[in-house]
Length: 534
Image (cartoon, rainbow, N blue to C red; front, side, top):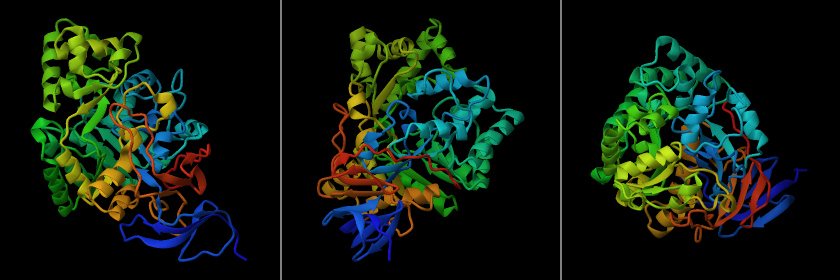
């Protein structure tokens, strides 16, 4: 006699993650896996969900997230669960909290703090991927995590935050640390070539490290060196690294940034298509918003970052450098959308918290100084820890990139808890990315159809990552599944009120455990770190 099942979803519209047309079926879950997909399942089950008219899909895979930055503060990652996310790829943009090398702990923790990283109090208590995983799983995370090794962490461990070429011994050290992390279950390496110290790396260093990733069968993801005026050159660099190293390359959050580059989204897609014709295994991902978010230090020139946070703060305070810094910061802001297009997300100091949600233009007016000076003062007072939202993209490019079938969906956001995080301005993508695609761009605007959109959130990122047992509704796969109503699913978060959960998710299962039932959290935290090869 067949064993009973934990769940049967009766009469669902299955969109299986492959991009194929929907079909009606019953889906049975047992022992944490998809046990049966059939026109009718007549077996005992602990729970039978009558899901007529609802869509059952693989749990969404956020191929580009930063919940590793927020999980020590918000381990439940509720903002991701209400989007239908069951697995997130972390360690993106060159940012990871491992490896940690003796003597470099303070440099790494200071660097991560600039990028909003929440760490446990005291010295970093881990050294490598395995010990980091132990601390992460002790949190009982709300979602599954797949980890990348951050290039910045490798470089800091080998040579600190120096603005120079790595020596042969330093490069060998990075390769050894990278190989060790890959052996311990990392899925690849990420680079953040717009941020120091990643921006200090040359092509030879990047190809050498990418070759190590290729030898382990991993994926390289890259926040490329330029997303604005240097977009095409930066894409060319990513392509050449992919071809030279023979590695799978993923361009992170593809966009055309700044007023000078509106309409260039299609040109970027053409560049990637041409590269694939040359033999490059290169893809990309995108979040469906016309604003980006990162540290306000992104508008500070690269030379000012050399040596780390303390050196940066010293330069910001140097009266002999003020005129040069103001001029270069002003130019960088104008390349985007100017001071009026940059919104401060949060400030730690009591005196500056009132500026959260206001623009740099408004800050400059309040302080009665030029915008460039306001940036310097704010960064100095906040010890360089100022997250910001940049309104600097065109909707036509967002739509063009989203319509391309090779582009996966990735939030570039954090896992947050709306009740606990309220008060800080933040980018709404942390709460609304995936339902925004399904509601705004599929149901309302018809930019792409539902099976294509689901594929970009499930089967496509699973294939890019190289994870075999998720991303598709198939018998034998892990039962990470989302049940939603396609007629109502929608994002509710916006820039004025970002801490609002999305709606339309009926049920969410992680390894067969119900973490959302009938639209409400069950309190079960079923996530874990999914390690490559294990």
